[in-house]
Length: 254
Image 1: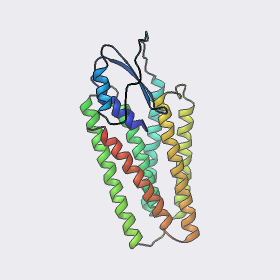
Image 2: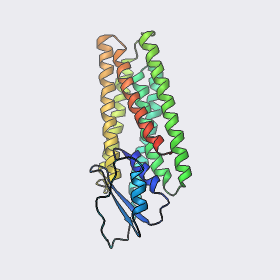
Image 3: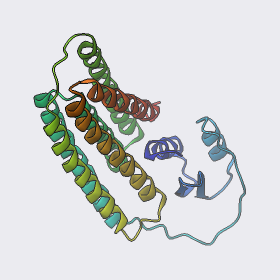
Image 4: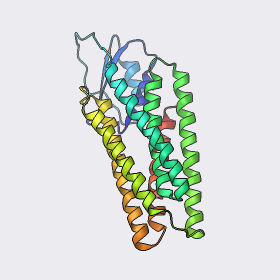
C-alpha cells in the first residue's frame, strides 16, 4: 500500500466478507493482517485480484477478539480534512486572483487529500455502492480540474506572458506550509500515530509540505527571472501528481 487510497481499495474489495473480523494495515512494510474465522481462500483470492502484488505470507491462530475503534483518531483525521479543504478554497481563490498556476495546482492537491480523507471517513458504516459512487465522482472531478489546469498552462506558455503576483504566491504558500505543519503536529500528537492509517496520513501531509516549498521557490524565481515559466513548471508537476492521485481514487469505484 503506497497511500490511504490503496488501503481503501483493499477495504472495499474485502467489504462484505462476513468471516473478516478486522483488518490491520502496515503500509510502511506493505503488510496486511486479516483477523478472520473460517477459510481464507476467498480473502486471499480477493486480495490477489487487486493486482497489487499481494500474496499470503502465513496463517496462525489468535485469541484476540477485541477490536475497538479509536474515536480520537477519527476526530484528528476530521481536523486534517477540514484544514486541507479550507486551504483548497483559499489557494484556489488567491491563485485565480494572482494568476498563479502553482497556487491553483496546489489547491487541487489539497482537494485530493480532502477526497482521500473524506472517502475514508464517509465509508465508515456506509454501503459499498455509496463508497464506489463517491470515489468515482471524486476521481473524475479531480481529473477534469487537472485537465483544465493543463490547458491553462499551455495557453500561458504559448500566449499570455503576464507574470503572476509572486508576493501572493509566496505569502499564501507560507500559510499553507504552516497549515500542513499543524496537520503534521496534530497527527504526531495522536496516541495512535504508529498505526498504519495515521502513518499514511503523515506521509501524505509531508508530501504537501514539499509542494508548498516548491511553490515558494517558484514565486522567488518568478520575481528574480521576471518570467512566468517557474510558476508554469511547478503547476505542471503538481497537476501530474493530482491526476495520479485521481486514478488511485478511481480504483476504489471498480
